[in-house]
Length: 233
Image 1: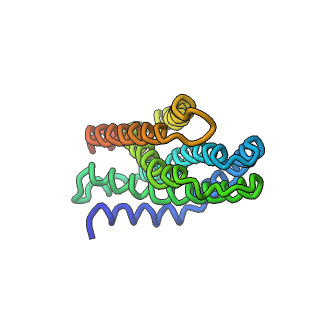
Image 2: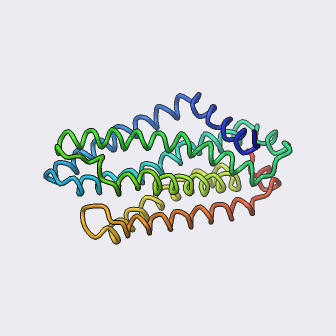
């Protein structure tokens, strides 16, 4: 078993044991998308493409926010309780440690985002009486674009949480998440070309997400163990 999978499995187990994080994730994954999807379905008037576009528009910010929620458990937790020092002494590079933790965040964040999408599609389908799940661009959005943005958000936020102190993280955490959400909303508004899903918009979102993921990897590569130790409270 590779070092990456060992670290990722550990983070996933810890995430599934944290009831507070799970409750927050499930509440946000169900309540917010459903309320929004019902409004979209009511305004779309049975147009499946328009409803699918609305669901795609809300699932991406939900996925990014899920990445933020699970990052707080994977990265900040060990700074607060001091166990990060033990991990830094392990025979594993800091880059691989960041990769494993980020992957351990992406898996539960993506699963809860898929839950949010499924519940939203079910609620919107019931109201709009349209086969929303059959929209191919929506399925592509959920299968390709959403996980890329979750990975980018988890990677960037995780790298920042490793490099910054606790006070700085409290300030910049919300700046990161709302910056991502506003950027997503702006790109979708400019590129969608209407109320439905645009192939061009999906392609651009995928490229931008990959660029942020590459940026996260670059930033994580600049973080040193000494820097992390100096930020432990």
